[in-house]
Picture 1 (cartoon, helix red, strand yellow):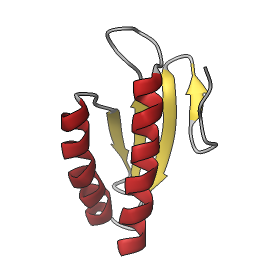
Picture 2 (cartoon, rainbow, N blue to C red; picture 1 turned 30 degrees about the horizontal axis):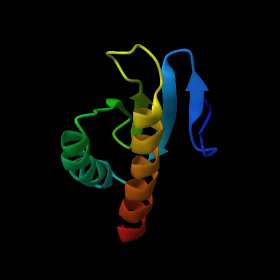
Picture 3 (cartoon, helix red, strand yellow; picture 1 turned 90 degrees about the horizontal axis):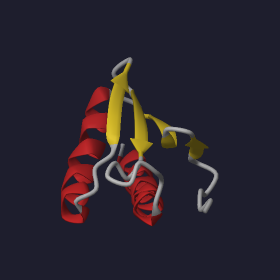
Length: 89
């Protein structure tokens, strides 16, 4: 199953994408929008902030230890939120 849309890389550790923001504030605004969605889906990404403006996002369904449709669905939502957030700044 490879439903990546070109923005995401399928690795042995799951789906991966690095997101770049204009500011730390923009990055935190993105996370503020992602948090409620992830909670509602009960599916949460692993995120690492680098250099204050880069967010590395990893998706994997932990209880199945593999990438599932839930990860692909969340990746599309992350792309949508990222586009909206970066257009606002």
